[in-house]
Image 1: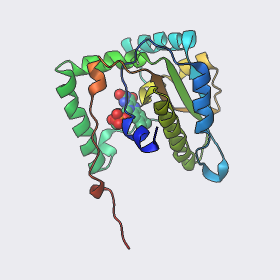
Image 2: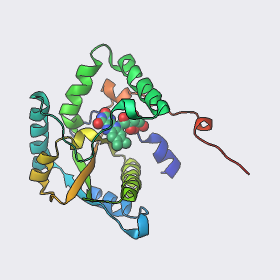
Image 3: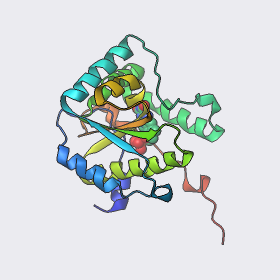
Image 4: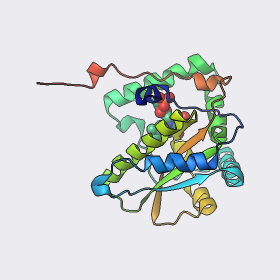
Length: 217
Ligand SMILES: Cc1cc2nc3c(=O)[nH]c(=O)nc-3n(C[C@H](O)[C@H](O)[C@H](O)COP(=O)(O)O)c2cc1C
């Protein structure tokens, strides 16, 4: 598969089928993703993959926490939408505003149900950085993550990056023995897209390139 095709085909999947992901294939995806650039080759990330019974336990606890209204305490705090740039707020509003067109009036219920079940992901890759990481390490982790997403796409494996995976870090620390001196940054859910699920038809547009690009000779 051409890189361009992988970039264009990747999209966030919010309901996966029950088909599992091969562990060796996952290891290969992580290994190739290590080719990402990083500040002075610092390679700051650690990677934890949950599948099978471990993921089942995480999913059950996540669901219980969600249903009982436990407050999220992710290691990286989300920022209020009001504090984002005007353009970013506009883009977020546009994306959210279009979801009811795909999911109907009960869109919040459907989104909530899927996120409480971790989208039925068959493997979740959790990415951590050492506590006190340099801001540049977040850049490095983004590059590493995109390598995972594109390598997965190339192998016909679908994905979603989500804050939702990491909003209850204590569950993950306990189940995956993640030490306290690491911050859990984000999770990537993997599996195979349920093509019947309406939630997977959510469309995400991009701004015109002219709106973000200035070129000068
Ligand atoms: C850091 C990060 C966190 C995200 N968290 C969530 C999330 O918690 N729930 C969700 O439904 N989507 C989440 N997303 C997915 C974005 O909504 C999605 O990438 C965006 O709308 C663009 O759509 P696409 O990935 O299908 O191209 C997250 C994406 C990123 C990069």
